[in-house]
Length: 156
Image 1: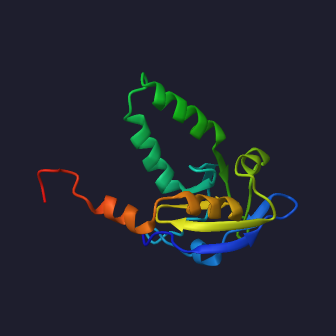
Image 2 (image 1 turned 135 degrees about the vertical axis):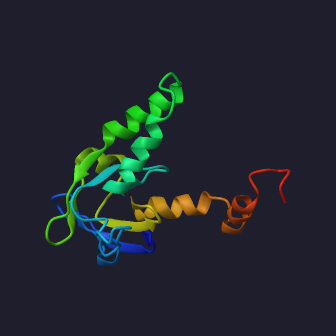
Image 3 (image 1 turned 180 degrees about the vertical axis):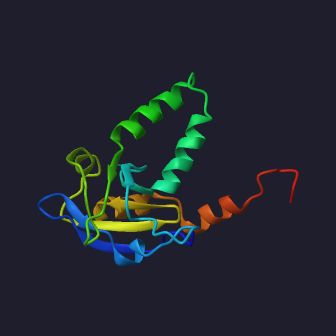
């Protein structure tokens, strides 16, 4: 998979639909299949956005989540919120996706939307909320430095 990347401005119509940007619709998976065609899973994302997952990525998330211990309170809480909000969506022939009203409300979506590629999934943001998120996030350079540190402090 080449991954999803970029940011795209689009709009939400009166019926709660938006058009997936053509560049994101063109991303192919390891078997040369279009990742955002057919069934796609839409659910609550983190930091107030919505997350759109290709079916192959959703299956991987389910495998990873199933390996967790169901007796952990955090696992149960996250699972209930994440999975109960999830819905299967299918783009129409014009690449439009219908966002259910409970997800529109969760992400405080209005007419203007920001759609961003985040490697393995796509996020849908209220543009004002995304700007607010960026303004309050650590600097890009700080995050890059933190992520580049070795996992093992003994290893340099």
